[in-house]
Amino acid sequence: MSFVDLSTGPSSLNTGKGNPTYIMMLTLVATLGGLLFGYDTAVVNGAEKSLVEFYISKALSPENYAYAYLLISQYKILVAVVLYLVGIIISAQIVRLLGAKKGGIISGVIVLVLTIYVVQYLLQVIPGSTDTEALKSIADSAKGFVISSALIGCIIGGASAGFVSKSIGRKKGLVISAVAFTISAVGAWKPEAFNFFGTLDVYSFVIYRIIGGIGVGLASMLSPMYIAEIAPANVRGKLVSWNQFAIIFGMLVIYFVNYFIAKSGNEDWLVNEGWRWMFFSGVIPAALFLILLFFVPETPRFLVMKGRDNEALTVLKKISGTDTADATLSEIKNTLHEKSAPWLSYGFFVIFIGIMLSVFQQFVGINVVLYYAGNIFRNMGSSTDTSLLQTIIIGSINLLFTVLAIYTVDRFGRKPLMIIGALIMAVSMFCLGFSFSMHREGISALIFMLLYTAGFAMSWGPVTWVLLSEIFPNSVRGAMSIAVAAQWIANLIISWTFPMMNDNTWLTEKFNHGFSYWIYGLMGLLAAWFVWKLVPETKGKSLEEIEKLWKKE
Image 1: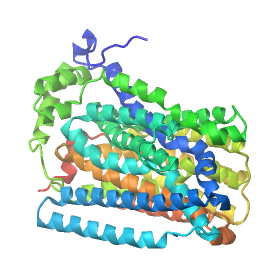
Image 2: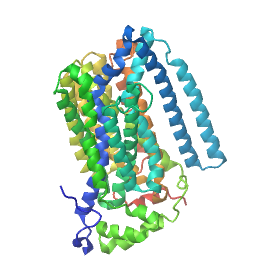
Image 3: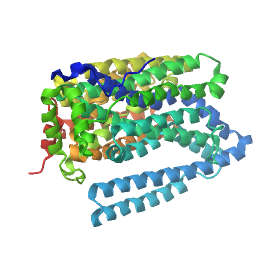
Image 4: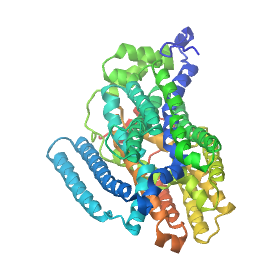
């Protein structure tokens, strides 16, 4: 395979009409970050049952007392480290937001103190003994921790993406992301062979998943940011939505990969070896992404921010044509007159909008469906193979309705899609909860899951990323990292707590796995209200025009 240098286009690019093909090629390369986002986060869907049996279930056996003791003690240490790390990240973001002055520093210290108290409380609450009841409690919590461990890295990557994008650029940040994906795929494949951490192998696995999560966190912000900064205003929504398409396509690809790997051996092989190849398969798209990134340019807005106007003008001519390149460059320079503007330069409201969009995108429960679909279908009585096949159906619906969003987001606008999608999800989750609670987990439950997935895919999946890539003004675009970090924290909360609710003995006896879906349904209603009341419409506006929505008079 030969590669064309995408940083240089054909001579027809200088006709004054721009080059849609060139823009699409840049978009497709950037969307590989989204594909790896979906691939890496959804791979645990097929491996979840095997991971639990291989690493967690054996701790419940009386003869494995030593392993159970180490599992508990190291689990408590890792939980403490993770929570301290998240606390530090939140504190740093608060200081960055409020400024490194008295108010910002005091607020950051308060968050750190609260983190210390929370960690101390949790260490007391987490059982320290190895009796049967305590081990069952640890197993449920540890399962959520192992399955959702990549999200810890996502928080780190998402929170640091603003700094990375501003200091070394969008393109180099994506290169770091591709390298992290590759390391994670190899390490998660053989965590015992690459265990340099002095932990149990299960926690070596967790660390490599965290490294992959850092790549996801970086890509989750930098891929849509890159696309938004090279896309013309009239098709920006569509092009940024292609990133969400790539995320869903990556999920669908790994669903098929997981299914065919699971069909390659018996249950014992899958528990001992099969899950490893699910993770290792990620090396292929990660390497492809890394190679292609060397053939794309940096975005014009970053180049202008660094004073490289001639390079920016060259890229703009290839994107928009010679007739408009100078005017676009001038417009960008006018909005970047403060290269290091404080994040509150445009008020807190724009940051609040970004944070709440991110939080609601996760609190509606989508990643419970995407990460735990196999587990949900097994709760309905499906076998492992059948549950993975049903997961492929979920992924196909997700992909199909994401395409619908791509072709409607610039026509109908962002707000209508978000409100309609949130209402569809709310109704579907309420119905799914009642299906479980009334022990009717058959075809009706599957239909409600498909309807929910369609509602998310046509709205909050792609359109949230479109809005996040649009609403932050050029001079404070790094503040998008606060919203991205909030998204991954919300994702971690949902993914970590779902097994605790879903496997809780009392809740299962009362509601038969239905309780958590009612919570997500309520979040869908709140999300619809939030968009209706507070989120502005950005359809058809340039990034510089959107900036005027927040401009302080």
